[in-house]
Length: 104
Image (cartoon, rainbow, N blue to C red):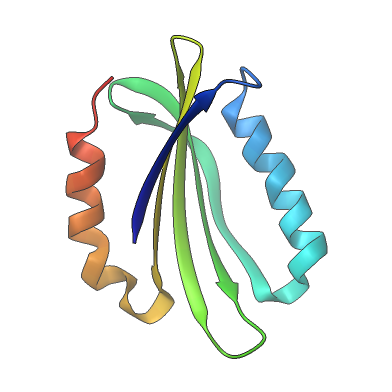
């Protein structure tokens, strides 16, 4: 799935927000949470934070999530791609096109 969200910015540091969320996920989910990367990136020509991880559910599901978060004109823009971990590469081209089409 692909989702987007726009909300008033509560911080001017998206990467720091993701780092805090990463720490919370480590505590909450333990070994079921596997971080794959936290970094700076670009979204719609603006700097953004990029967070990639997998999450394994207690009932056997496995998800891979890629989240980008950018600030623009006082708002926070989030784009999230989620797919079953084993199928993520099938959806990757579609997610890439969606990211590439995003403009502020």
